[in-house]
Length: 340
Image (tube, rainbow, N blue to C red; front, side, top):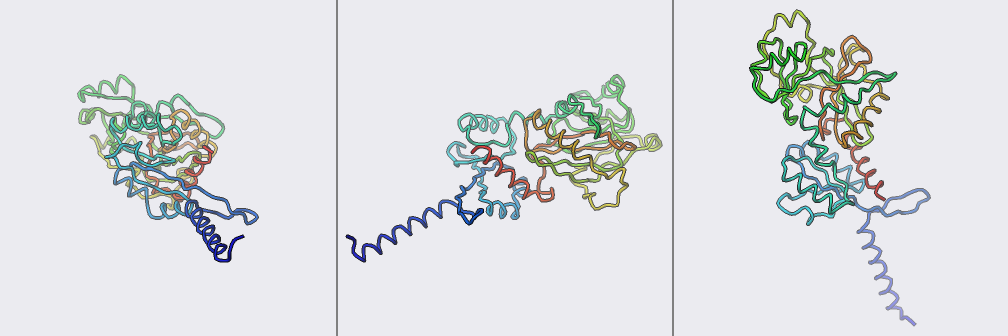
């Protein structure tokens, strides 16, 4: 038989035990008033300071906490295996050393989702290979056709560029982009004599008039978000003959203001058909092996359904994507759910 004092003490122990369980797990109300435990999702991130500032904005972290997601910075001075435990590793760092660390971690921690595989990311950092999967895809159906501009890779010797362009049959003007996709600066070459002013290694793409509007297609897992950006203006034959030389531009699509609120000609500003983008995104997710990337797409001026992918970026500036915090947190939760 328990005495009255013993019963009170026992009750207090039970209450303290229940309080501890509540602190260890977040809870949420579900249908019928039942309480269901929800484990905190720990996301370890390894990003540059610039990427951390643009991506991990207060509104994202606040929403993540409300959904049971915790972002934890990875200490690059310590072994990755000694940190965590993580449910997801989010990263965008360069260098062979980091890639080796991450590949080893993936082998020893198969239960952790790594976004994304280092080797797959490396493929889109080189513009020589970046668009190959789009070109091989040759996507064409009732909603439109998606291709890539004709391009030429110049690895060295700027004096031979003019002859190489003529041999390849490329038409002027040409967009010159650094071979390494980590640089977003570009140049527009109007005549073949000025091509020797360019600095290899680079990729030359035929410039396609597109009404000065670029579509940035953000992909987060299976989610797709499209925004309009102002781009390079169209080039007429008259301008081509009157403007010899090479004109350099900064990060055009990143620096330009959004064109979503601009008064655009519907033929120029109409977004690409949703079914076409969904099919393109699905195929590229599979071929590239990536879940976090964006496509820069243009519509050829004077056409309704002819599109070109001109660039692919891994882990782009999601902070500029409308509703990115909701889309991204839902994506992270879906990854954990798939593992259950």
